[in-house]
Image 1 (cartoon, one colour):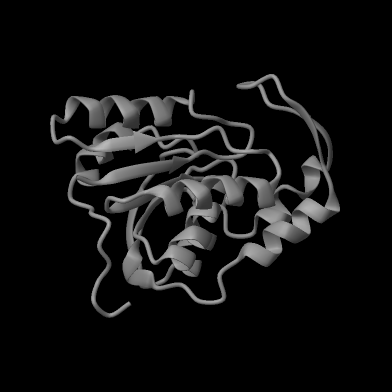
Image 2 (tube, helix red, strand yellow; image 1 turned 90 degrees about the vertical axis):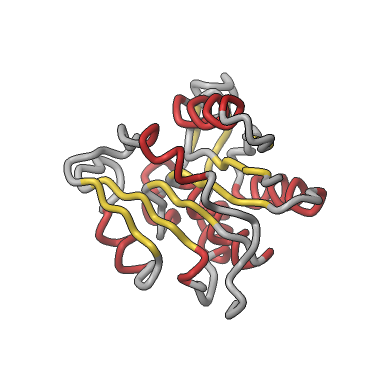
Length: 193
């Protein structure tokens, strides 16, 4: 049985539409898959610690699913724990993308108020893997992403499996069509890792 760990993006949570669609699909698949979508801390080091703790406790094959900032986190964790990851419009340089949000923030999903600082941006920069094992990633990118430039991720993950949806947005409206492909993934890596 494969376990799927979904890592949400900035200002999001396990109640997001993609997370709910994924949970519902896996529950209805009848294949006995398990799924977890934790509410990640808004602070990068804490979010990674949360996810790493869940991964370390997992005893079955595991696949990471990361959306946006969660895709960046999934890359860090995939390299650290040698796991396969499906990335949905992943952030590549979140310390630059999120710099405009420095200061007080409010998460609409949780109601939590918090403050993003330069220290948090430094934590993000330090998390970027020095090397990516392209065979372990599957990118799903929308060319009309209004938040991140899909071409940055396509270049950064050169050599990885990539599905590019012409005209799709940051939410990735075609995500439900991609869900059956999750069942093809397992927690095992290619022998060349």
